[in-house]
Length: 377
Image (cartoon, rainbow, N blue to C red; front, top):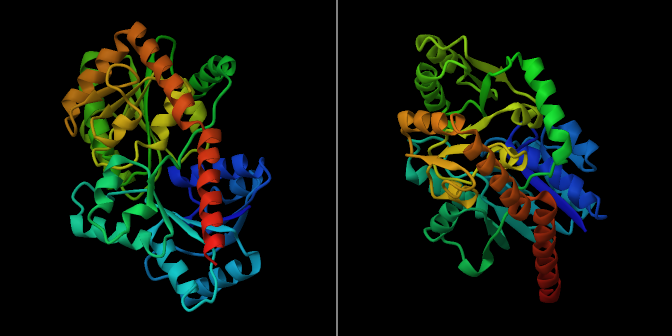
């Protein structure tokens, strides 16, 4: 099977990291995996995982004519069995590239993100979601909020299925302690120090300012704690100023974009997801769980896909940085509970979100759609 993925770019991010993992899992089973997308820091890793990257700039809703022509040529030359679209701009570019074409492969579309900012107008969210579904023969809904949203779109419901597209790789449990100790030494975390981490692009939808405010509250109670923010984005300077204004610059560090998030997570005593908007649970939550790191998150419907409160993670009142801080302190002050939550989270992640299982399910969806399309010709 030859699978062509279309997304904006192969920069560092959860969707793009997942494409690298899917390429590794699917090519190991004999499939051919291509990605038509803009470049980025993960392009080389995608190819090292067995995929092939075709550079096509699909960022922005108005893709250049030259890039649309390139996409048209890729489809004609490669003749993929199925195309999987992962963004609104990619869906629009594909529609332009195949307009009036006598043939195109069946198309799978998955809404990978719901809201770009907490104050985003609902009409904008609806428009982006609708554009992503354009031309799709099958729509994969990866979270409850996406299912509710599709009910408001002109989409034939029988084309939609609920399922998991994003997954994580399982780590050797025996190797985690050594990775943890080495990384803590490199990060300068002293003996007896506690490390709390969050990972994500420094964009409004991630609400990192709430993480920083919670950090300030925690440090008033427990000065042993160190906080890391991993990720880059246009809000970096604003966040840096917020850290300094709260007087926590000595304990809250911005590490920027990193390619070793597994090592940083392994070194952490707690992972925090500070996002307040609905959308998929977050790939970093699953990565932390896979490493046995306890997770604290604001309570949204979608995050409950991976976190059962008090069992596989802890949930704070959505948007309440003080409650987030109190929840962080509660976990850090009770090592037994932290260990139990981390272990339960790891079991859940292995059972539900391991990349091999995700790839198997996607294979079945692709094959069924290809067979249905072939029977209809």
